[in-house]
Image (cartoon, rainbow, N blue to C red):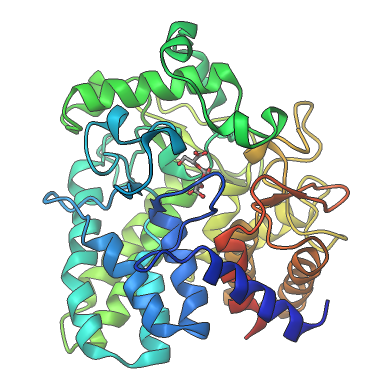
Length: 418
Ligand code: 9WN
C-alpha cells in the first residue's frame, strides 16, 4: 500500500474510533478510554487533527484522581456494563484504580510542538506533575527510586512472561471466573488472549487492591503482586525529560525534572539491568528477584537519552539478536523468539506490537542508529500497509491478530509517516 493510502487508512481508523471527546482503542474489544492508548493516539492525532489530540488527553485528565493518579480505564457511562469485563461494577467507580505507563507528558510535548498552544500546555503541566508525584511518592514500594506496579494490567503488557514467576506464587481461583464471565474471549480468539488461569489471578489482585480502597500504604508487605517494570520506569523517566522541556517553555524551573530522570535511569541500571543478558528485566518487590524472561519491556529503556552508551549498545545488540529479530523481515517481537514457551499468537507472549516498536524506533534514533531505525520504520509501515491496523501481528507470517482497526497502531503509523 502506498504512503498516501496508508495515511488515509490510519486516519479512517481514528475517525471510526472517535467518540466525541476520546478515542476507544477498538470498538469491538475495548469500548472505553484507556490511559496509555490515549497518549499514543494523541501523538498520531497531533498530525491529523491537533484539536482532537488535545481533547483526547483533556478528557482523560478530567478523570485524574485527587491523589494524582491517572486511571488506566475511564468508563464511558453510555456503554452497557456487559460490553467490557471487568467494568465499572467490578471496580466500584467510574474509573479503575490502576494506572498505566505515563506516556502523556511526551504526548503533550508532541502536540504542543505542532500547535504552539501555550494555554493548553499550562493547563496540563500541573496535572502531569501531579501524575509523576503520585508515582514517585505512593508507588516507590521498594524505596529504591523505582515505581512498582500493583497489577500486570498496569504495565500495559498484560500476560508478558515478565510476570510469570510472580503470578505463579498466587492462587488461581477458578470460582472467580464462575462468578464473573470473561467477555474478551467471546469477541477475540481465546488462543490469542490471556488464559483463564491468568484472568483468575488478574481478578484476585485487582479485587484485593480495590477492597483496600486502592490505598498504596505498605504495598510491599500487604499486596500480592508488586513488580518494577523496566518499560514503565523508562517511560516515567522519559516523562520527566518531556516535563523539563514543557517547564522551560512555560518559563518555569526545570532542573528538578532532569534530576529525577537521571536518578531513575541510575536506579534502573543498578536494579533492573542484567549484564549477563545485556538487557533489562522486571524485578519483584520485596524479594528483589529479577524475572528470568527476556521480554520487549527490557529493550524499551533504549528510549532514554541519558542511558549510558555501553548499555544502549547492549540493548541494540540484544534487539538485533535472533531472540528479537531487529533488522530482519519483521519488527521486534514482544518476547524472545528462541524461548521454549514463545507463543506466536498469544498477546504479549510473542506477537509484534506497534507501540513497542515505535518506542524502539525512537530509541534507535536517539542513540544514533539511523540505518536500523529507518529499516524498522519501513518494516512497521509494510506490516500495517499489508495487514491493516491490527492490535498485534503474527511474528512469522505478519498476519494481523487481536482487534482490527486498532487505534494506537493507526496513530503511530501516522507519526511514522511524517
Ligand atoms: C486491560 C487497551 C488495552 C491496552 C493494554 C492491552 C489490553 C486490557 C485488556 O488492552 O489490556 O487493560 O482488556 O486486555 O494489554 O496495553 O492498553 O488497548
